[in-house]
Image 1 (spheres, rainbow, N blue to C red):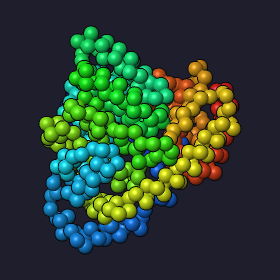
Image 2: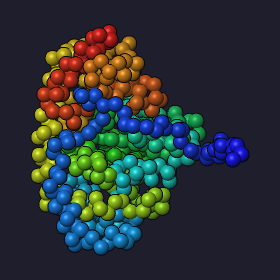
Image 3: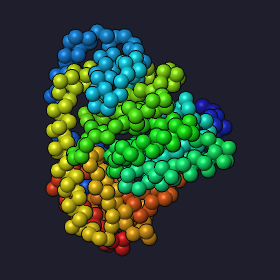
Length: 401
């Protein structure tokens, strides 16, 4: 056979194509896995989900032969509207809901229809890496806004908007995780939310509210959602079942004003969210979700307390950390000269402790080398306590504690 020249795709990739991502096996996980915000694996309601799936298949299984509506399974959308009205004072109809693959797909849909290359996107100074990745995918000009223990600082937001506008680049949106913020753990109080909302409305900049941790409250009182406080139709709202059921179910949801929702729906890829999973989740959450949330919050509260105790005993006054009222993680800050990024792999290899360093969450991709997100959702309380001790030992050996 004659030699054949191998085909090359050089020069064929779209200008908007993302940078390549390495393929291969899963990343190494530590015995003490503080890197990823997994929920507690032993509290996944396997029996309830199996019963719900069986009931759904018995009643509607033949519908799996059909292509489902792109907005998602109707009864689950109806349940979501009832939950949002009761828990978040958000009053919409099932037609105002789109179910997606986790919360990531709804965020992707919104960014796709709103963001052009170079558009200024405002976020917290450290924020969820998944959303940052998607903003970069659409070539947004991502700018972090200063935060404190109560969230985004209003004066800093005003300054960021004025600076961008002075460059002829009015910000396209403000992305916020106001409750149990990822990765910093704080919850924005009502007065701060109102101040941020007032600024956004004054400048005509919409807010994308990511509320996917709101059910995981271990103490304190709920704070009103931006969506409920807004009377101008300027807030998009995204949430998820991932942290209260399981990430592997891949079910989240979105609501937004009709003119935006219809555009986002047109950008939705893959048709309807998984009906098979939707059957199981819908039957389970109807009548069982409140009790399940109460159960998992008791479990996670103990884990949070164990991590806080371990930090207090092993890090003392040599570090600062948040003390979240809920969620799955806290934010650790070492002395300014510490470099937790450069030692991460060594710590994982030598002491079996995983964490994510600050630059993963920085809009500029480089800030916060002395910071780390520590997740307490997966390991047991005893493992968490031991893992924090191991982390302290590793940091001592690396000269950062």
